[in-house]
Image (cartoon, rainbow, N blue to C red; front, side):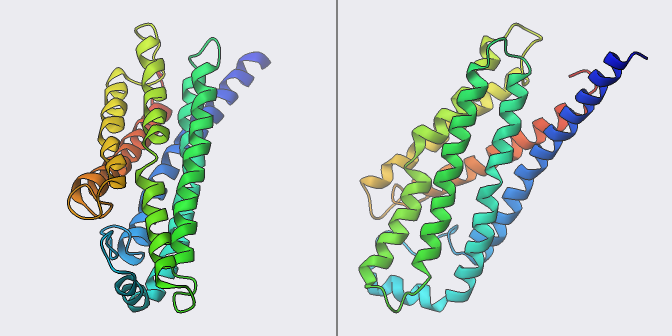
Amino acid sequence: MSETTSNILAQDSLSRKSLAFCGYTGYAAIILFIIGGVWLGGMLPPIPNANDAPAELVAKVNDNLLNFRIGSIFMIASFALFVTFGAGMAAQTRRFETSPVFSYVQIVFAAGGTTIALLVAFAWSLMVFRPDTYEPSILLMWADFAYFLALFSVPLFGGWCVLIALPIFFSEPGREPFPRWVAYVNLWAALLFAPGQMVIFFKDGPFSWHGIVAMYLPFIAFFAWIAIMSWVMIKIAHDENS
């Protein structure tokens, strides 16, 4: 075996391991969010509600203060992993591009999405940092800020999905970076994120930031999207024909 062939095989092995690693970090992000945002942090399902009076929110925060604080630590760890998750998808796209347009733009969207997600965790952390010192309306503002960052940023997260789908559609048959059905999954995900923008109009009901349409649907769609894309990356990494 020539030195050149050995180098190519070594690089291919490293690429596969890197892609699998990025896929597994997507799963890790989901697990950490379930611990931090669902089990401890009170973000999903939301312990605070958009129509809470400020004093009511303060009482809820104080009743769950330690859990919220520990949950915030897990949430910020979860959201930090969006970097590697997004890098894996961009790297896989880059492998099949002549000019690295879509992969570079995916990196920008992944960085923006990670920043927004980290700010969600920061806002949640500040809400529970000193609830007895803040004015009650300040706590309500931090809760609004966290959910608006998560739900109202549809163009960023939806755009990220579209930019994963487009290079699949534009590729020649058999030269797609991901299977063609993945493009449709990403378009559906972008569509399911869209109700999040309704939170600006409602403080109660299904379109508020504690509602089933504007909050539950985008959150579930988002983490289902992460799970699917993580599985796809791991599968590609272990597929010798990819």
